Image 1 (tube, one colour):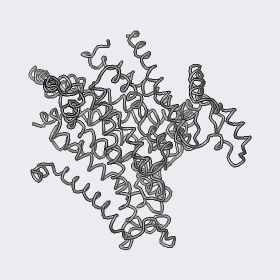
Image 2: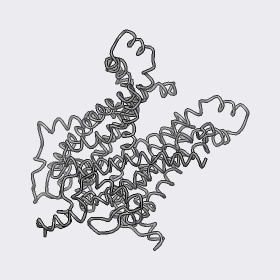
Image 3: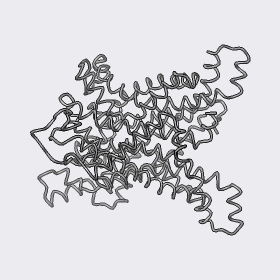
Image 4: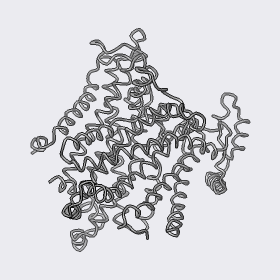
Length: 314
Length: 278
């Protein structure tokens, strides 16, 4: 197990290397001179040259890439061109904010979607199934930012009971933090349940047609036991991959939701950096996001045999 | 035959087809007739509610929302369509070569594909937009590049399974070149899974285009796009909620139609679900 994990982790490195080269290459293609942006209005040739020299922008792209890479190895992600903040701690700070929004949303979505998918499969072709499928298709089709705006209108303006923006850290004021989280979390949950419900329904339907389910029923065990001991565990495994993908993409920040609600999370951080052409921040955050995404997927792979004994790690 | 195919669809799929046709039709109508100039400012008439004169009301600059919605329909459909076409062409090329030639070609292509797939699509598209520049062509290129790896994976998987089939072997025994076998025998067999994938990519592209425009990096204002109109309406949500309601509803209904039709398509083309339906 530990050995397998080590190998898998080591295998992430080449992917990360390719991704880092890709990111670095992409960022350098962005038109616009960061030195000019940094200096703002008071720019002249001498100042520009000085800033370029200071930022190392005069070196060749390859030299810049390898100097960035060697610093990355020691945990130095560079510093923001705009705020002079060190990039890695800044990412950490934003990531904590994103976590507080994303984790509740993720958990709620899983706890709604899995039973809903299971119920739809169990009551296949009845009104229950049809209702769940319709709601899931709806939630697949409504953009998260529109859902967010509808919620803001309903609960912030029409019937103003909840704050429509901003963020309060859980550690500072729990009650206010929860009040601020309700709308963004609801918007995220609504959008995220769609895919998971559909996957769970599809795989549960497939499991229910297997001979061992007929056999289990023939044994005379209760329907509850059939569903929870036989259908659910077997149908859960395929959903696990999707759960991992959803969590991975959620953790990379939900730029749109964070923008609508004015939450200073990772997604908003990267969008702001993109506007400001803040190279070190864009590079560092993108790489961090990819690493998180790969790690979450690795974790899902490792959890797989726990839920599906037919899959062995090798 | 065609009529029977449509009649065989479910009620939901039929209404989706009607809805999507309406959107497509309004995009076409926008080229011929518009009640108002979608860019014309009219400060005296700003933030008016829906009326007979302005069906969908007017925005902060007094521009007619109905005309803007019509033009926006074209933008959304065009951008999504061409980004899917671009992604499909590029992805099929990469996937087919990787799957057919195998070895180092395969490994090299797949490393790149996996690297791109590990980046969240919307962030990748954002960075690409900065490089290419805002505008319709920019969004098409950015989304196409972001989606091509998904296509490449699907095509490669199908090619790998078909490459070993007897009819491909027969073709090479008969002395056909590998490129001919690839084009004549292998690529056509990927069309089934590709059609299903494309319908879901089309929905994703439409959603991403509006998200990019919403974030201000898609179709540059003042040119109308549904996502951009939604972003503009955000500031006036308390005085003029229709500015948010109408574009959002349009995006949602269009996506709903595409998703419903995509499901119907998958039920038809995917033998696994077809068996399940029986």
